[in-house]
Image (cartoon, rainbow, N blue to C red; front, side, top):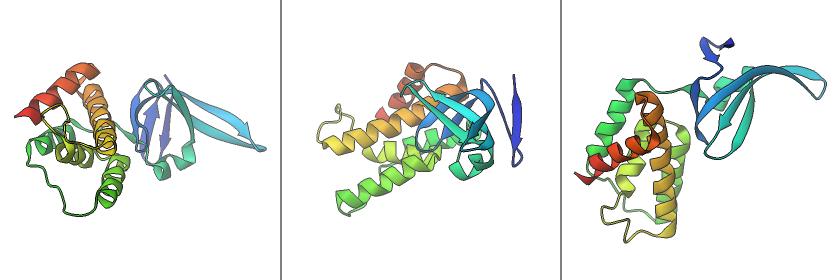
Length: 168
């Protein structure tokens, strides 16, 4: 197992991480590669769900927003957020959609939980537009993925846990 340290954060191969715009991925390698004549150390992150591989220069990891999986306390705060009452602002959907996308792409599990809570509809998502469903499903998937890795359970168990909380 290779370990590299960048700005007081060390990453290891085989470790799960969160990339804000793509969600949970697994570090498959830390390697050196020559790109445009200069040698770079790259963190190679695989996102199995999206069948995507991302190579991030170690020097840019902090700027990219890559982070370790959240602590259990942060996940518990996110789950508590799901129990709250939906807070839907009375602004145009297009503006709310941008706010929701920004929260999802922030990578903050509590902000993602707010989106899930605000867009959740108990009766099989009836009454939601296509774009609302898409944003809801993206946020739900991101949060469930991180919960699954943090609590060492599978994605379906994490999804069920979230759905049970939302249904109350």
